[in-house]
Every structure is written in C-alpha cells, then in structure tokens.
Length: 224
Image 1 (cartoon, rainbow, N blue to C red):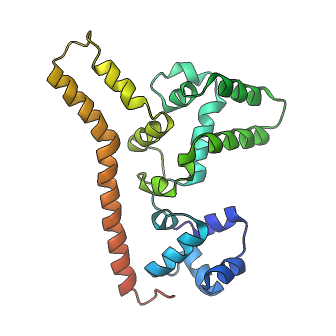
Image 2 (image 1 turned 135 degrees about the horizontal axis):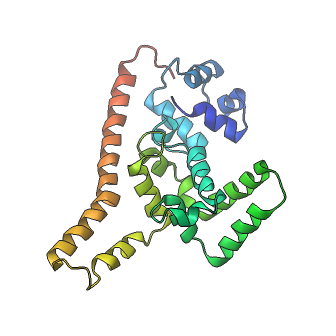
Image 3 (image 1 turned 180 degrees about the vertical axis):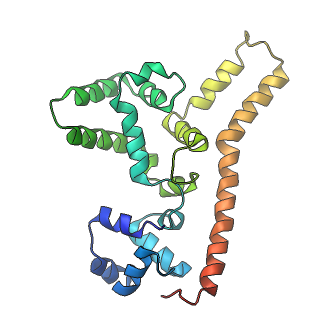
C-alpha cells in the first residue's frame, strides 16, 4: 500500500490542500490513497516532490519513518536491555551516545511525566540525532516494512558509522590467528554485507520501478 495518506496526515493537510498545490483532482487523490487507482509515473513524482520524499518511499517501498523512529526509541526505553545484549542494535544505539546524551536520555526516562510525553521526547531526540531517519531514499531501500537482519545491518551502519573500522581493527588484531589473506577476505566480506548488498538492492529497486512504470503506462485505469 502506498504512503500518500500517511504522509498527508503527518503533514496535517487536507485532500483539497494537496489538490490545490499539485493540480491533481481530489477524486483522483482519494482513489490513490485507497489504492483504487494507480497514478502515472509523472504523478508519482509530482506527489513525491510535494511531500519531499522519494517516489519509492511514497509507493510504499521499504520501512516507514514512523516505524523506524519507534524502533530506535524502544532501544532507549529499557535500560536493562543495554547490557544484556552486547550485539543487539539497541545496545549499539546506547553505546553510540555521548556522555551528555546518555544523561539527557536518562533524565527523560526519570521524569515524572506520562509515557506518551516520554515517547515524544525520545522520538524528538532520535530524530535530531540521526539524520538518516529523514532520508526517504534510505528508508525505501530497506527490505520490506518490518525489521529484519538486513535492515538491522543497514541501520547499525548508520547509527555507528565507525562500526566497519571497529570490525576491521578486531580482524587485524595481531592476536587474531588467521593469515593476512584471510583477514583481507573477512574485511571485504563484511563490507560486502553492508555496502555491496545495498547496491544490489538499489539496482533491484530500479528494476521494480521500471516495471511499475511499464505497468502504469499499460493500465487503463491510470489517470493524471
């Protein structure tokens, strides 16, 4: 399902306001939101420009911004989990905070306020700290609309952009008893997981987009 309605609601605008800004009829917008009609590619682009997102994200590809923020926020809400799971993404989120940021988060958690207010503070904190949650091309590149192993690798590489250097420093530790060629292989293999796989997904996304365009051009119900 596309994210037209989700983005319109988050922008707090009506169908009429979107119509006035984009030149797309209210009737067509309503059909698009309900998935009862598919926009042509130029209409997708017009709507993507209006909402300031990528076409892929607007079409429903990848992980939603709200779901990612909720997931990262959950990683700050349970202090007991930070030391339990050394390899868990939530632990990495906590470790990546500066001392001052840890104090800020702890203060928020200790405030005598409602859970709704705490969530709001933490979500604002996450949004301000991690610019990638507003990168709609990145969000659309993630696999599916749920957290999975691939998505966690992608998110971790953005939460802590030094993680590859940390992995390499461990691999190249002189006490790590494997040959130099094996160390080079392991280092390259990890980078493949983080980067090359992303490129392959991006290529696949382009192929999907091309197919969507072909289908849209052949769809008798496609309007505007």
